[in-house]
Image (cartoon, rainbow, N blue to C red):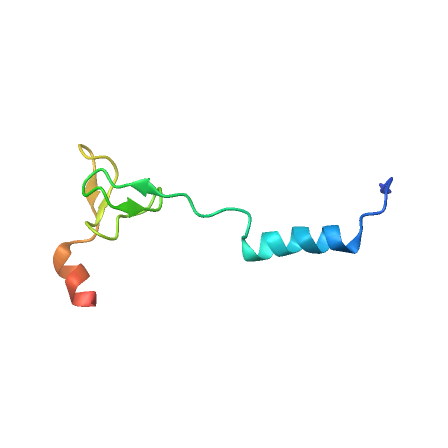
Length: 71
């Protein structure tokens, strides 16, 4: 079994665990929707227009009537 060469302090361990748990390290990446130009999470359906993919080959996943009915 491998043995550590140096002691890792409690503070170092707790900081590492808190960053992993709370996700403090970075903010989520955002990209622009090619259809409407609003910000959205990458590789997800745009919540504003309902399209997924590029402007030419995009697919409308959520229709406007369904989106309005939910609200």
